[in-house]
Amino acid sequence: MIIKKNELKSKGCLQSLVNCTHEIIFECDQDGNLTFLNQSWERYLGLSISASLGHPISKFVCEEDKGNILSYLRQETQHREIRFNHANGTPMWFELTFCNNSVDGNYLA
Image (tube, rainbow, N blue to C red):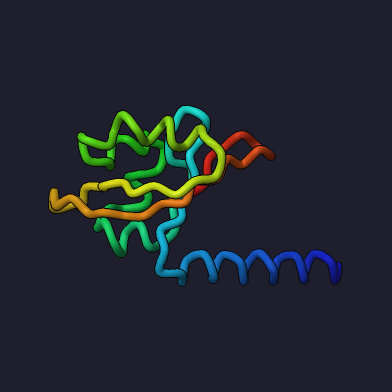
């Protein structure tokens, strides 16, 4: 019972940390579909998390960078600059650190 309480407390702390950071954290499956987004996604891009999940990350990237995003995700850890479209259509530059999560095959940034 103590282990479960500590485990829940740790998960809650981690969730709070992920949502309080000023960085966008996202996870994509092997096909590039969004499986996780933190609150910064809405804060910086003006896009609803619930409406974005399940869609390809490329849907939210500027046209000029769409061809690159999936190849970046599949490579080892690296830093790249990518333009995302704000909900109002304005392109926004972001520096991303991609990480291939070998545990489940998903991609983190």
